[in-house]
Each structure stands twice: as structure tokens, then as C-alpha cells.
Image (cartoon, rainbow, N blue to C red; front, side):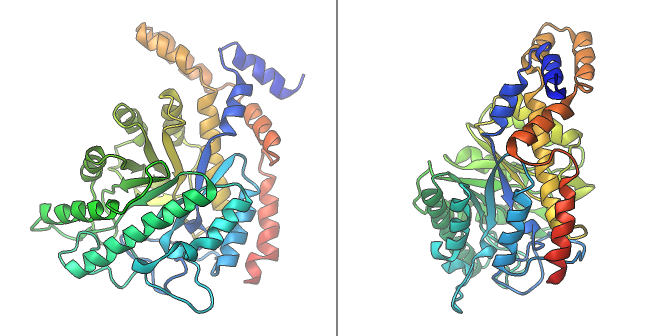
Length: 415
């Protein structure tokens, strides 16, 4: 009997079908963010990263061209089990033959290479307007700016992104999640908190007035508690974004688990939102003290988020995307570790006897519930993970890192 067969019997005794868990996980798409590969720079500007976010580190081998970024993503994906989507920011438009247009004039053709890449790999694409790192960010504001011309430029950018998102969905046959996030805010205490939020609300409404098929494009609004240089006030707060999504049909709330106060956990918010919204979206990261976008690990909160998605029968209701950027380590390894960690969290959640545990809670058998929750922690999950990886054709253990080291020597250090 193999180790997996033994593990399968142990899980079966607790009412868990590990074969079914593995089969289910293979069907769940997770969106892989392109911006880990080049430190959130993109291809439409040469300036620094702005908008309250920051990438730290200078590890060698950063992608600087579309060809390098796509090559690096391909390498990373070859070491990950499971189903993938691409997640692209608007600043990653690919211009050819000397052409350049500003963000308000972007067209589907500027993302044709992304579509070609995705279709060859049977992947969908998610999209994000880029409201940062641009000279038309005026005094740190975009959609909430008191300057009408500034707002108009960014509204037109958002509308262009709606059209591009629908293009992605039609070309790939997979709905496109389009996430609206801005770093708009103030460094110190503002005199007017409502004015910027009213302008922000009206600007997003103007963007969503662009015609689109709601079955193809899933617009989201993402909140944030603060950012670098906007410590005192963020226009798109949690209350604002959640209220906007609740009041606008077809608009989803997007929660980034790094965008809340340190004592808040998104795992607790997932079931709260699923009680009201038919669909929600997540950006999965790892905050350390603040929204520092560290590489996702197989840690407690990551596991709890996955558990809540599975417990709430939310696998077909929650759009999941990774969002972190670390330039202090090998960028491809960062992609792989984060994706594999979220895959582990989902598989662990699928291998949890959730119905049995809920029954104990409903019977107020809280002592037994605690006992069983602790027992589950030492089940032979590693053997189930190894079987899942084997079926997906990737290494289960750290031997995949040898491929990264080889790629670094042969490709990254030659750049």
C-alpha cells in the first residue's frame, strides 16, 4: 500500500474523500499576477512606482521586456500544480512598431500578445486599470481629484479597461474580473472627507456606465486602509468600497487581506459577505505589520481563508487572485511559493470534514469540536499533497527549486 493509499484510508475514516478533493482542486482557477515578475513597473513608463505602494529589494534578473516577463511566467507556471488564470495590469500594454498611446486611449490590440499567450495555455485573463505611476496622478489623486480634467482622464482609462476586459473574456471564453483600486488619499488629516468620496463614487459610476456584458466582465472595487504617503486618509476605505458594491448591481466587493487593520482578518469577512453577495473577489497576500505584500505562505490566516471559502460552498462564488511583489528574492521562486501555498490551503480545506465539524458546533459539542479540530492538524496531509502534485505533473517537494536555480544561472543572470 502506498503512502497516499494509507492517507486516503485515514481521511476516509473521518468522512473525507481525498480523491474527490484532488479532482475538485484541479477545476479551481487561481489568478497569477504578472507584476511580481518586474516589481510592478509595467511597459508604459520609465518612472518609479507611486500610489502608496512600494517594492523593496534589487535581486538580479528582473524582467524588463514583455518577452522576458512572459518567459518567466511560463517557467513559474511549469512548477505549479492546478488551474491558472493570468492577472494583468493596464500598464502592461504591449506596444509595437514604435506606437504609444496614453492610458485613456488603450485598446484591445495593445493586449493581443497577452491573449495569444493565454489562449495557447487555455487560460483566462483578469484585468486591472492602473491608477498609479503616471504623471496625471495630480496631488496623489485620480478618480477623486477635485480637478475635472484629471478625473475625466482616469474615467476614460477605466472605460477603456472595461472594453479590454470584455475583449479578454470573449477571446478566452472565460469571464474577466476587472478590479478598480486607487491609492487616492492624504498624508495628513484632511479638511473634507466626504467630498473626495462623492467624486470617487461618481467617477466609478461613470466607468461602469460603459456598456458591457455582465456575464463576461466582473467589475470589482477594492478597499485599502492606508498607503505610503497616504497614512491619514484613504478615499476608497472598506466601508466605501463595500457600500458601493452593495448598491450597484453587478459590481463585486474585492477584499485584499493586506488592506485592513492588523487585528482584522479576511477569513472572518468571507462568510459575512457571502451571506449577501452572490459573488465576491479576493486578492491573496501576506501582510507583515502593514500591507507589505509578502509572498503568500501556508500559514494560519491563509489556511483559514481557504477553509471559509470551502465551508461556505464558495468555490464557484469567490474569484481568487494572488497579489504580492518581492524584489528581495528570486522573483520566479516567489511566484511559485505563493501559488503552491494557496493550492495547499485549498486542498487542506477540501480535506477537512467540514459538515461533521459544523454538526458538532450546532449540537453545542464544543469540547469534542476542539478535540477534533486539533486532531485534524496532524492528519497525513503531505501525502495527499504529493498525490495531487503527481497527478498535475509537478514536484511535490522542494526539488522544484533546482529548476529555479538552473534558470537563474542560465537566463536571469544573463540579463
